[in-house]
Amino acid sequence: MGREATGHITYLGQSGTAKLLLESQELIVRGAVKTRIPRADILEYGTQDEVLWIETTQGRLVADLGAKVAALWPQALAKAPPSLGEKLGVSATKRVLLLTEARDPDLQSALVGSTAQTMSNAVMTLAELYAPSELAAILPRLGHLPFWGITRKGKNSVFNDDALRATLRAEGWVDTKSCSVSTTMTGTRYHRHTP
Image (cartoon, rainbow, N blue to C red; front, side):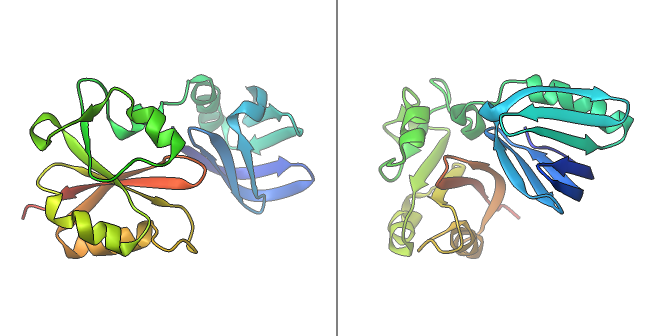
């Protein structure tokens, strides 16, 4: 996922220069046109000349992206989005050690059959964090494996991704990937920095 393009977008009476972002669960439009379209609401799509059109349950979105860029979008829209487990890189053979309880239902589902009982059986660690004190409690246990920090979305959350990133960077960790976990949670993967 993650395809993006900028062009002249028209949708539901809005029109102007905007950016299209194709994510695993939705199509996001930012700029003169602002909207979020769940993938489930996309009915049809195609191109004509330099224009991408997407028929949604609410109406037709038209994006003048140029011929080369527009031609790439139907294939991207047709591709099945990766599962959360695939985005996190976990599976029955790539197990994760949970450093906190997984409370988010989408995260719980993604981790079924892919958790490890010990650090030696894991290829990464993961913690779902809601407060700075929860991060402080697990910091000594992070070890050397890649770490997924799962936090609540939004600037108004008590402990969000920005706060997690600032703390971990100060501790010598580097963020290398991020993904949406659910409608309310986001995840960022970190590796310990080795100079």
